[in-house]
Length: 405
Ligand SMILES: Cc1cc2nc3c(=O)[nH]c(=O)nc-3n(C[C@H](O)[C@H](O)[C@H](O)COP(=O)(O)OP(=O)(O)OC[C@H]3O[C@@H](n4cnc5c(N)ncnc54)[C@H](O)[C@@H]3O)c2cc1C
Image (cartoon, rainbow, N blue to C red; front, side, top):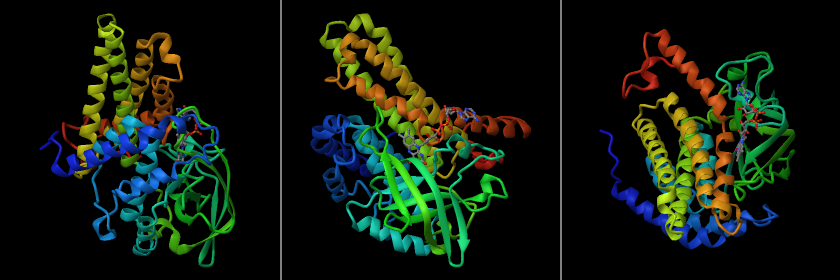
């Protein structure tokens, strides 16, 4: 039964997240956004305080000391943290996604080696490194294309793999203690089977880190460059113990980005509504506000439903991709419309509305871009039509074959 009521546990986390956002994130968010030295100003104290509350480790399984919160609860928490600042919130939630990958896909050795260390160190952040200067969308395609995919190579040498190549635009690259690096293990086959993931501690010899990307939005959430020069990684660190597996992206990533889109849109609509009321201009912009509200509610509905299906073991990849695309497109639309409601004031740095626009425009580019997600959705549609018809209400991808992605 699909239920929109929050459980007692979710209400408890909602309050923890709301209090933390108001007391710890709000006082520093604007200063972080304006920083001209993002690495020096990285909010380590905030992370330590959030870690004490369990906000960094909340998807860890109970056997590793975490509360094992599901993705519906992630929505509730991000809706509070992100309302105040999506960049600070994303520092925490990036760790939920990546620790969950190790907990679900990692070998016993990998779980025991890395998850307790991640849990016990309140500055332990995680990164997932796929994008390269010469490889972006082509490594997210739903089919194997010639010369597509990551170039960073991993060559077996006895009981090690040797990694060589470069990554860029990797979130937490400048600050993470452990990196999940995607590498090409076999160039003679397509990228879907010739690519693998490695868990690489930051201090491994041969790893070095280049510039921090100076973005217009999501500023406190750092991306950076990674260089691998003859980095020797033990075979035990091959994620899941087998080649041909790159699993850190997917349902969780789509859902996470969709909820950031919903919350930044909510914050922008709230700000626009308050502003219109204060200016006595409510009736002039009422129709604009109603349109934004309608789009926001539609975003929430697709997000909640796709997450519910994923949590209830009926994951529908085409639905979660649709949620990411729909919610991020709507967020950009709502944030720009909200800025219009402010008139010239919308352009002033002293008001947060311009920040919502800057943050929202980053979302469609994160993980697989929206055009690539649409390509993947098309592939599902083709597969379903091949089977006779599109899925019925409530039917999951798993039940209809599906198209991968
Ligand atoms: C804030 C932020 C955080 C990020 N974090 C990470 C991270 O943690 N780890 C990581 O590995 N990467 C990360 N990325 C990188 C992100 O995954 C890439 O930017 C994304 O995959 C697109 O790659 P690209 O920028 O090289 O664009 P390109 O591949 O160069 O594409 C440029 C444009 O062309 C379109 N395009 C390309 N190919 C096709 C096609 N075949 N059909 C239709 N349209 C196409 C794209 O949609 C895009 O609009 C992050 C990016 C941002 C902005």
